[in-house]
Figure 1 (tube, rainbow, N blue to C red):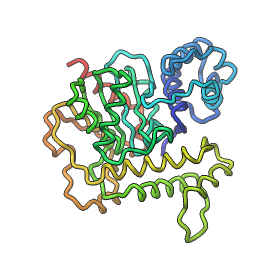
Figure 2: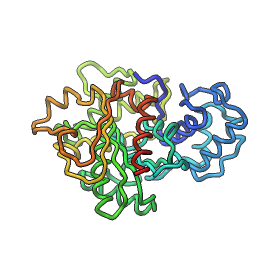
Figure 3: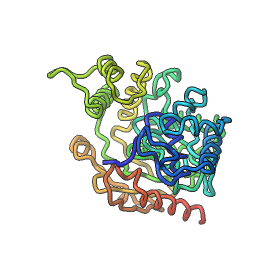
Length: 346
């Protein structure tokens, strides 16, 4: 299992990314103290400067001294109105390489991906967030084409850099691959697509069934008790989460329900996916457990794996840890940066 704290929202993802970049390691828990973890006054100034660049805000230096824990600093940013309420999120504003765009997986956001915004990734890092994750955006996109068109339009409106590497973890790799195709069609310079343990076993799934699967996983991960013989429902699980003593940011039912709907919509959108041929470089970082046996069993169509597609510029890197550990695995992060740097130098 992962040996680091997993952030809970976009604000914590940004803080964790810059914390990792400044100190060389992510926060170990919500209550990790910046100074106890190796921070100094000079490093506090560097952290604030990095957060200002990522958040586009004038965060005061005293914020780190007044709220030195990961929880405290993240809360200070939220309460100060600097939380990144945007579809295109900046995890890191600085670096030498071509910018990297992180495309969300089934969760619809950047939660869990903060290490790709921190050291050793030496380039600006952007993160996309799916439509519907914020209830004010409206319903999530229903098809893969809709998701891709929406992402491309959001990037154009945000005036994102027109030359990009794209990366996606798990099913996010499929979204990154298809988004790269669309951006290439629109004239963007797609430098590469990095697939982080992306499987091509995509069994049939209805959006409502995907949302129920996510709800059951939330129940299991939170250790909640559901009456025997009953299926968890959204309202009861939300009540259990908000009444439990566990650390949670769940406070708005509409946002909680929206998160489930996004998960279900992404799962339904990639059902039966078969990739097309592309001309840009594709790099696959793969663990031994990349293909979920349950997904393999439920996928009715014949699957041709990435290495067998005959892509003109393809390379696969074996990752010696499991699916959940890889996005915090320091050697893998270094290998990703080395691949991106090599492609930049072409």
